[in-house]
Image 1 (spheres, rainbow, N blue to C red):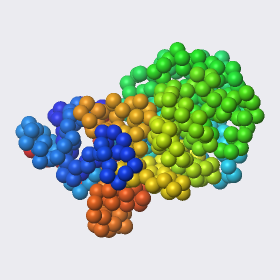
Image 2: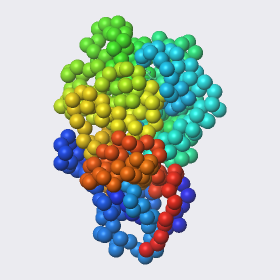
Image 3: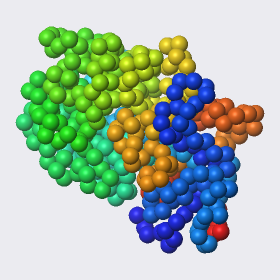
Image 4: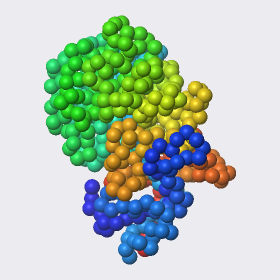
Length: 445
Ligand code: GUN
Ligand code: ZN
């Protein structure tokens, strides 16, 4: 990060952020929407977010103010489940999950044995996140430790708050992608020592899913989790009916798929499970009680024909929930696209998500799912100034639609249903602009 010439900088535009879960009703709680707002950033952290009218007089003379009036400033998007090594095979035609893994995902991941390929792919991937306004993500590597070294090295250079881990898999996958219980645990422990807590980086113990890990490997992952309680756990759970059936055959004594992970000590806070489609009430209760989180991956679940996440029962159980793109099973890096599909998935289940709740899930809800809400996900004072500027006019249709939307909720709703990467006017990391499509208009007061 380059040192800023002035420690204080302010950004004027509409502001949206959440102080907590806005609830399911149209009358949202814990939401702050300020039509003419000011975001004040000091040395990479949020100093204040309030109306421009209230804050402008408090700024010292000479404070630069970037004029984003007519645009929407909000905390950066948080993608709670994505695979960086699958960038190159996104949108691959296949039957459902298990064939798709064999035909497309595994061959693409093989290339990450090559550190130069991993570095180039990680760089492209992070550019793509910035272009889409995603400032934090929970990321799968491949089985190769070098894939995670490459990813973290790129993320560190860019000062990003990122979470990633080496995939553990020692069975039911091609020989060329297989590790061993001891080797996988040793590599993971070395990567934790090297990267976890360095800069803004966090490590995630990453067993791919119960199908591809032996009991010995899951036990080793559980031991690692027990000795590193602050580290994340990241896996897939109950995505596809054939996968669930296979897990039942592989672990005949387990009460359920979730029970496999729980019995190996892999269910706790900072454990994030992608999909969570085929769960029962007991599973949902256990997830909620443990503090583990579900990463809902709507575009992936539709693309692979996996199923429809049940927001109503997850909510009743009190499960922590975030949104994930699940690229390359997911079909878009854009969290706006992902939010639109999430809304439709809930509709198909007879559950209506308010626009407030969907924006919450993509920001503070994701931060809470990751246990990082004391650092990211809102404009509360002291939070890291990772934020995005939504254009509100990125296509002729959006520009036209914004004119007929009467309330902030109507605008947000239309924006998320119609928006994509073109909506991202600018992305800021710790108060530094890393992506921009807007003319700069900074002035001093
Ligand atoms: N289950 C196990 N591996 C994967 C993967 O790479 N993508 C998805 N969507 N599900 C998985
Ligand atoms: Zn996935």
